[in-house]
Length: 390
Image 1 (cartoon, rainbow, N blue to C red):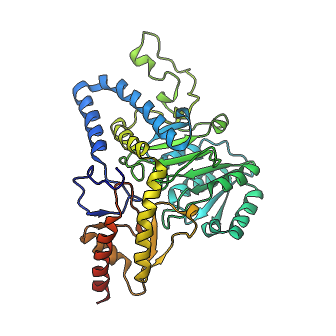
Image 2 (image 1 turned 120 degrees about the horizontal axis):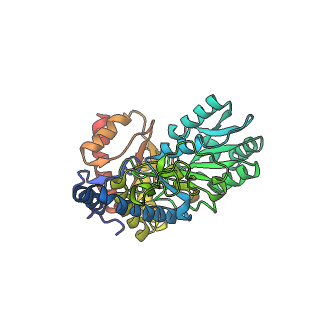
Image 3 (image 1 turned 60 degrees about the vertical axis):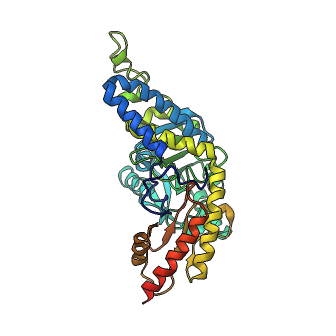
């Protein structure tokens, strides 16, 4: 199935290299959403228990991508929701220090800034460029050793595709008595992850990018070792053990003293996007069949060829020369005199979907793409470059 576009028959772009922004839903995802919607249309609230069970399956599938257990995973609407859940559930103490990275996506910076402002916690910025070499990593480790309650980092940088050394960061943070929070949205589904091996305490990701689900679906991982000292801030009726029992059981089950759940799903709170999660399960099932490591290798073959072609035409690649630092994103800066925004529009007009995050041309293939599409991309690129230089 790698390189097979047959599940995307309605996709207008002939070359869709923009999965780092949003993946188009495949036919199985659309069918699963349709099935869930039809179920609710026929049965109304009687369908709800069935789709609550489906969420249990989905937690297990997502946990499998992380090397975790289903109880460690909560279903949340998006990455930001997961960050906020943890940011406001940690018992902050005077003198605590949060470390974040300059240039990270705002979803993994803004919540920590608010925590610092409202809880009297110190927030410091680190330089993401320091993640790329030994000298820089030594500087980061020194900052961590000086005091770190929590380090927040993206598994993969959204602009350049650089893959962070999570295991090394986790070791440094834990040695300092802190915890590691990872924004995993640009990695989960396309980059192999192991939360235990990499020392990740928390990880949040949305479902509409590399997981290939739809908007309004996401996940939050909470390590078992972290759950006991959190004080969940955003909780509601389904955060309780047997929270829905009073709706489907015998008389006298409506109680307000039920204990909170002890698994990660305590953060789910209330009724969520069951229809979207039906689609996400179908998408994750495909990823599991293909294997994330296989997907990653497949995409590297495509990116290798794209990178050579673009560099030959005067582009500068931001992709690391170290394979361990590579994701499924290739970002480039154009030759002098080329308007990046105009290039992106011109490529789109010719059916090539890309993105331009803050000064880069970003290409992000996934499992449905194939090596043959590189030829189509380069053919269009040559025409566009001539037009832009005239």
